[in-house]
Image 1 (cartoon, rainbow, N blue to C red):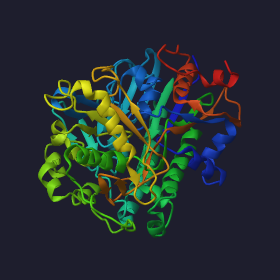
Image 2: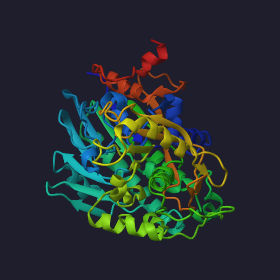
Image 3: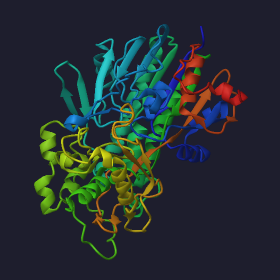
Image 4: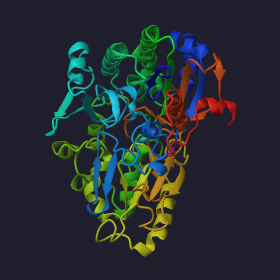
Length: 534
């Protein structure tokens, strides 16, 4: 049988940050892996970069191939958007569902529920980085055993029990501007990192697995919440000095220590992979997709403003740093008198247990049937859906006008600019379909707005629709498409450096190292063959 494969994910760790800190000698165990094996950055698919970052690794293919666009479902006839706590795996199972061909242990792969054809254990939802975590295990009592021995994840304080006996976990993302609260979150993440290391070690000791895949989620959370306390950001000068240390580095050093512990117990012949299918950068997505775009489309559709700032003139005031409440509460207070009468409040949505109650774009949902175009809530691109008569409801845009209205919406969005610099926010606007009914298996969006990665605007302006903001930041770090892979063991020469590989190449490599045939839908090649140029 092939040697064991141990795959450890460092979820959403930016490769340039990793390389910099390894070079400074701040991460000794990761530095040892750089010396002992192969390193390459990995390029993931850019569309739905947040929702599909792990799905492309699990499938080994793009969303265009899998026809699975994240973990949200939109029903056109009822304007209903439902967010699931796990991927659906509609057409392809995750690559590790190998039946009795291999023994597999899976721990906390993001947005993953139990699947059939896994001969081994699945321990899911102890503490991954998502808005709602589905907690499941196979065998069913495994999660309880792990919690009894290692404790619950200290960050997740809300547990919702479903009728079918499953649990979902969540927590309220703390205010970025309250450094004392942030310090408490940092401490909880360090504690959970040590717990996670102990859990992975216990799984390693259970048996000689053909594949063990486990993920450190803490660096993902740290990147979102502490970016401005670590890396260049509009808020850095005002807040970083209060932190006392680099919180992102603090978390990564705890993980580095854990990797040292795990490395000491690896089987001598194990192939070790440490990787992330995506990275992190200054957040250019949240405010643009979740607030600016839905408000812009509402103003364009109705002639009214739901949020303040439309009539503002002159220089944009300096960023405030005195926010202390949850982001949704601070943003809700920026609504206009008109907005108060038409928006669905976050409190009302929370009472209905809507998992998107915190998202301002979701507050526009009652207005979608009356708008010409609206934004589907999401975590990556701006997802614009035209309200087409007969497809989305009884009113709305005439299907014959679909192309013209797409052009009009595109022009409107192209006019949106950072109010502080005058730079346009949109890098590209993609037309998903030429007609309203074309390709129903693709994204439910008709237009996708790709935002510029080098802008983290807190206030925007449009030449005819006015100013929106300034508004507080939700998360200072946002998703980037490039991750990395470190590989050590037979077949990976020490000190090897490669140009970027594809995320699907990592999927193919894991399968290849287990001695498993690579399915036809996997759009990558084993990294060994990439090295050989074949």
